[in-house]
Amino acid sequence: MTHSAAEGIKAASEGLRGPLAVELAQPEARGGLSEAAYTLLKFHGTYEQFDRDSATERKQAGQDKDWSFMVRVRMPAGRLTGAQWLALDALADSHADGTLRITSRQGVQFHAIKRGNLRAAIAEIDAALLTTLAACGDVVRNVVTTPAPRADAIHARLREEAHRLSTALLPRSRAHHEIFLGEEAVTAPEQEPLYGPTYLPRKFKIALAHPDDNTPDILANDLGFLWHPEGWIVTIGGGMGMTHNKPATFPRIADAVALIGPDEVLEVAEAVVRLHRDHGDRTDRKHARIKYVMAERGVAWARAALSADLGRELRPAPALPRLSIPDHMGWHDQGDGRFWLGLHVPAGRVAGPLRVALREAIARFAINLVATPGQDLLLADVAPADRAALDAVLAAHGIRPATDYTPVGRHMLACVALPSCGQSLAEGERVRAPVLAQVEAELARYGLLGERISLRLTGCPNGCARPYQGDIGVVGRAPGLYTLFVGGDFAGSRLNFPLADKVPLERIGATLAPAIAAWAAGREPGEGFGDFCARLGVDALRALPVAA
Image (cartoon, rainbow, N blue to C red; front, top):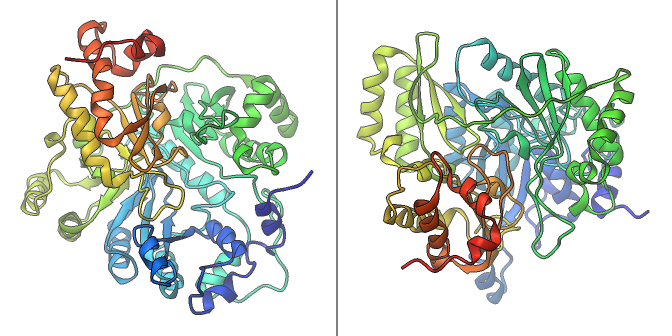
């Protein structure tokens, strides 16, 4: 059986080293990095990209593409001290494009880092006691959980398990430390007892959650641990990516596979990683996620395989409890005498006045920060006496409070897309505002602007903003064209379905209008938009008359 090219690159990499040290030390060559270097750099937390806005003009002028790097910080549970945030903020000016971006997996990304600055940028992140190692690549990536900094036993346990998993599941190779941090090279590559010499077939995402706070969308992850009074419900096989017109690829909600004890998280996680390592498809990267293993082999097979691996019989999982997502924006009592303030950050882009305001707030009030899976920031550990002063600092810099945004605006997700992402088929972050405005206009037209709706926008079908779980998913199809999905739910417990294909950007609101009008007229008490669409079904929705 022929393995993919990436598998060959990993096998020959000598523990994720390959040609990286040599190529990064050279002046930027025309055409960018080699395929091997591009593939291996992902394991170290960075992607080589180019400015797609200028690519055609530069080509016509006989110039190479404008190459740069996206660098992603691994931050389990999204936690940052104030000092760490300030270190990242400084890096945005010294090495990147003057912005930081909160990801949909509680991380921070930098864009437009030039090759000559790449090593220094990653070293500065390490000096802040953070890392980019395994923030990308075919390994366990950033471990996410509910962001709420509540001072209770359940939230403390979620954070502790996220940090424990993140540390234990890092690659053992010292290649990262040699190439980026100046550590002396070893004489022979290290062994990878968990991952093996070719690591995983594809990326692997883990989330932990409480049923009352499914902010991390646990069922979208390869592996999830859902709090239960007896321990944890283990969910396996979620994933958002797909390819247009390729029905063999599809988004999937994870299956509930087992119920485990409270102290079995790490060993079960390692067993599920081995399951993916040994049974994932290494011949076709579009079919390599563990969701396809689960779809083809089923829950009973997975539980039996894990039981055999662990040497004990795993209990079947109970039915999943009802999931919900609270609103973390605005002021909240942490339960320890302090407060957190949730700041909405549209598309996660921290720039301009917000950067200045955060610097002042950290200096004056000794706050810490939490990045959320909703691309927002929580300013944590605020003393009661500082609340009014913190509000005043933000207001002085023109930072809008969360209450100034509509519910659909507060909860909207958008991926970066153009101009940097090489996978993007259409705009994402840069058309967030007009897409939101169209949806808000239709909701306002029917008196529904105060309703909570999850609206998720991506520039391609890979699903980084989890569009296939939302009440409304807007997925890039081609330049200026989108596929519209409806029928998911706000809590992230159900997939949606395609309503209309190749919808022009300016027609998104009008295309959704009949369904929104029908929801206004015929919804049941408390019925969300996605729930209503799921109840009617795609055929009935498509047959609705165009709204007047």
